[in-house]
Length: 171
Image (cartoon, rainbow, N blue to C red):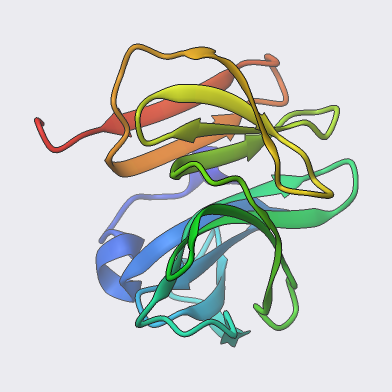
């Protein structure tokens, strides 16, 4: 239960995390080398390396992750090489990343709501839905903020709200 977990040292600093999401008592994340980890949310020092992203991490990186509770599927946004903001599925047992499709838009973060709709925010601050079969992005509207570094987005299953922690290079 994350509400009762004591905060000590940052998992980001200890494990060099680049993207992650919570699911069923664990925090799943990719580090800066593309290694996929499962971290116990109650005892962050209790973690297991499950595999890697099967991507050339000198070119590609997983930059955001979200869990679809309607299907049990973990999604990620991938950047680099010949993709800008590709939606991908993550194998939760091995960490392998399977590209669904490139939106052609540089996506900064992603979340999934209670109905299984994938939402993403682009680097220029646009809010989109993303098709889980093709990766195609559909524009919803502008957020009014730029999203060029350090983003996180989460759907709150208790309230039905989407929360976005945003930073850009001006902060």
